[in-house]
Structures are given as C-alpha cells and as structure tokens.
Amino acid sequence: MNKIIIDIFMYLFETILILYYADTLFEAKKSKAFRILFAVVVNIILCAVYQLKYVYINVILLFILYTLMFALLYNISVRTAAFHSVLFVVAMFTSEMLVMAIGSLFNNDFNAMDSDMSAYLYVIITSKLIHFGVIMAILKLFAQKESNERQAKYYWLLFVMPLASILMLLAFRYLAYQVALSQTLSAFFAVSTVVMLFANILVFVIYEYSQKNTKELYDLKTIQHQEEQDKRYFEVIEQSNKEMRLFSHDIKNHLMQIRNLEDVEDIHNYVDRLIPDLKKFSYTGISKNKMLDLIISKYITLCESKGIKFSVDVKTANLSYINDVDLSTLMNNLLDNSLEAAEKAQDGFIQINIFSKNKLYDGLVIRNSCAATPKIESGELKTTKRNFKAHGMGISSIKKIIKKYNAVYGWKYDEEKMIFETDIAFEKQKN
Image (cartoon, rainbow, N blue to C red; front, side, top):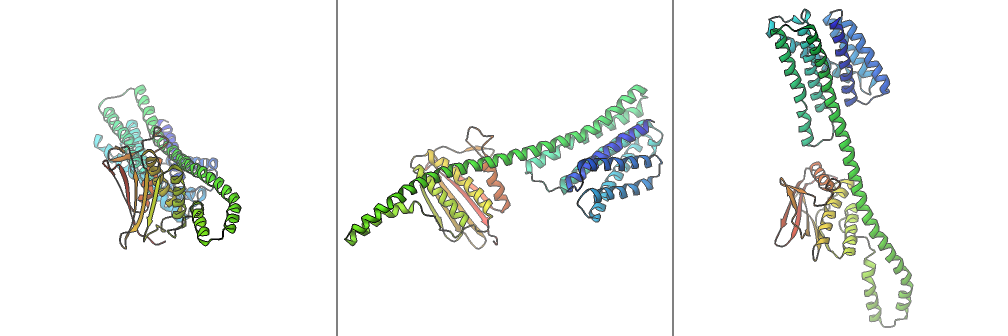
C-alpha cells in the first residue's frame, strides 16, 4: 500500500514535469485545462500499468502515450513528438538504472527496491531528481530564450538544489542500511523526501517566473526610455513648428520687400539674410540612409536649441545594413548620452564621424565634451543618473545591438581635454 501511495506521487510529479517540458518547448493548440486533464489521464494509465510489473510494456506505453500527448496537444509534427518522447523516456529510464546500480553498492542487490521499502524510496526519489535535472538541462539547451550570460550562470547554479537533495537521499539510504528505523521515522523520511522532490520543481518554476517578470520590466523600461527621448524631440519639433508658422506669416512681407528692391545687390543681400532661417527648417540629407539622416536632423535641432555645437562627417559609409529599429536605438542612446554630457559642459559640442576603414569594417566615432569623469565599475561604464534602476537601460541596449551585429565597441575619456569618445567597428554586411 505504501508503494502505491509513493507511485501516485511519483506519477503526479511526472505529470507536472512533462507538462512543463512541453509547454516550454512547444506552442499549445489546446486549452491549458484540457492539457492538464489529458496529462493526468495519461499518467493514471501509466501508473496503473506500472503496478503490473511489466517493465517492457510500461516503457513502450510510455513512449506511445507521450508521443500521442505531444502530437495532439501541441503544434508539432508526429516525428518531433516521437523524438521528444524518446528523449524524455530515455532520460527517465537511464536515471532509474543509474540509481539502482548505485543503490546496489549498499547491499549487493540490484533489485533490493522490490523487497526493501527504504531502498524503493531511495531509488524512486533519487531517480526522479536526476531525471528532473536532466530535463531542466535539456530545456535550457533546446529553448531559445533571450538571456544574458550572467542569467545563464545563475540558471546552472540552481542545479545545486537537486544535487544537494540527491546527497541527502544518499545519506538517508546509508543511515537506513546501518540502523533499523522505526515506522514513524521511516514515514517522516518518506514524506520529507517527497516534499523535497516537489520543492525542486518549485525552485525552478519561481526562477523562470522571476526571469519572465524581469524581462517584461526591462522591456517596459526600454519603452519608457524611448518615450522620454521622443517627448524631448517632439517638444523641439513643436517649437520649430511655431517658428515656421511665424516665418510663414512673415514671408509675405519679405517677398513684398524683395519686390520693392531695385538694386540686384540689395536683393542678393536680403535673400542671403533669409537663407539661415530657411536652413533651420530643412531636412538634413547627407548619408543616403533615411533613418540615419532623420536621427542626425533630430540632434542638429536638439543641439541648436541648447546651444551645443554639432558636426557630422559621413564619408564612405552610412550603416545602411543595420536594421532601422536597431540603428535608431543605437544612435539615439549614444547621442542622448552625448547630449546630456555636452549640455553640462562649457562650450559643449558633439562630433559624429562615420567612415569605411576597409572592405570589411565600417567605423562610427562619436566625440563629445564631458566635464565629469565617467563612472566605472569593474571595467564597465555605468549611468550617473540618480535613479539608476530606471535609467542605464541605454548602455544595455547598446551592448545588445553591438553583439547582434558582431561589432567591436570601445570608449575612452581624455581627462585633460575633457572629451569622451565612443568607437564602434561594424563588420560590413549585405543589406
């Protein structure tokens, strides 16, 4: 009776694990409630068949039912369903054989689990822990999730939990072999080990949930950061529109004045005085890359409104192979940081130089005045803004795009001249 109770919990564990595995890797085509019900029915059948002690029939049935479950509940082919079913069953069967082999070292009996309750509990729980660890590792390798290297390291640290649990079970098995345990103590150990098994799943689920929330928070902060940039630009555009309306209102008077002039030289001088005002409303088109030109126009306008000198030199490269969204994110973040630093400096300036180094690489150099020494932690550039949790997203976005385009990124600061320089080398790609 005790073995049946343990088996029920083990198949409940398998139900949770198989659903988590499939939901992580595949796109569901049935509702969550139906998937849970289907998985429960499948494992009830497997648990019932397992009681008959027909090992080969149980393994074959495992493969058939899991393949059926994958194929019916998720948008994958039968071949893919069969592959993952084999992977899941092999991991399960191998972990059980491994634990039984290790357990036989205690009493020289490979099948001790058939007659010894403590041996049975040790083999079942430990094998499930190993199976769980293997499945989590497979999920990490198969699932294409966006995570940085540090997050990946943290994920693998979670495997300390199942490893520690296995060592505790090994100690329990050794203790049970050396000392005769009372029925109460045996029951206590049995309940503890089952709880520990489900606690392992809980640790991984909580971690994945926290990572999902972290990613959503990062995305929201990125959107907020972009909205702040756009708001500043729209304010400048609105001011520019007001000036344009005033200029449009005055243009009639200017034309009348030109009409009344008789001397050609006076006309030329008058027109020359109007040209600077016209240039303020012109679109900057210098690179033949519309997105890059729009960004340059934006920061020309912003710098003029703040009294910052802005110069740009685009020679033989225009970064046209970079996706518009990525180029906008990269340049806006770089120039937003430059603008903030130049705004605080005396005689602030920003210089952009985009050029082709050779047939393989394009260079992007941004130089700006910077009165304050950059904040550096562990060799990494950090935001100097007070609310560092809400800001500093730009640096992460820049690094993400640098990595995406296999570029080389560097920066330097000249304390004597108080100039900050950003250098990026892009590997040329086809549009």
